Image (cartoon, rainbow, N blue to C red; front, top):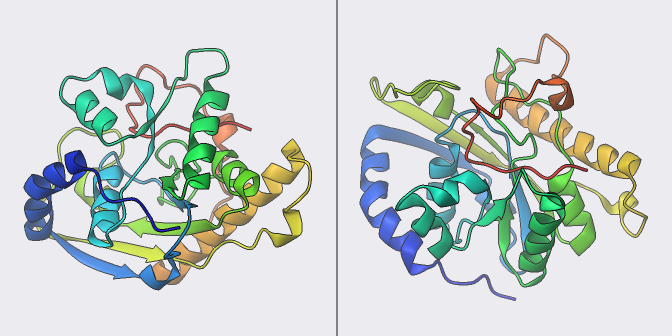
Length: 251
């Protein structure tokens, strides 16, 4: 099953934004050969900055893939941005309504089964690790992959945080920064397939994904984390201050 064409709304947005990205940032992209050429799958990047979706979207469009994110529902109420996101068929995650996670999960599963590529940030928020290392993950990405039987593709990215630091408003464009993206082979979940999707099984799958992302970052940086991985479930709610553009699906 071939991937669907990039929606006109996304192509129009990219027409205006891409030239600026090309001028202001350098690219170091590797691993695109690990992206499946047919059928749906889940793309799972680490999360380091509010501008991640723009840069991941840039990567996707340059590989002729329509970027489709799970996104926080409040963004759909923002003038112009909301219209663009609806036209681009992004999937809202309604954090305040009962059963919201299941609604977003159902939409994501249906999209993957229809041959779509769905982008899910497994951490669900920007990393709070002082060194920018991946935190633990929430189970949404693994759940979608195991439910559909489609690949779970890890994407490690670094550099966006040098342009716009977490929870800051003003970018630092100069000197010109390098955006590094590494796409790895699908996470091996074969031993977990065909089993009931219990919390324990989903945690195992998610930990495996985060281990892969951490190893990819360690290889890029030439160093290992010096502190334990932060547990996202231990973080206090930042609903009033966290304007992350991505949604998350809990287990």
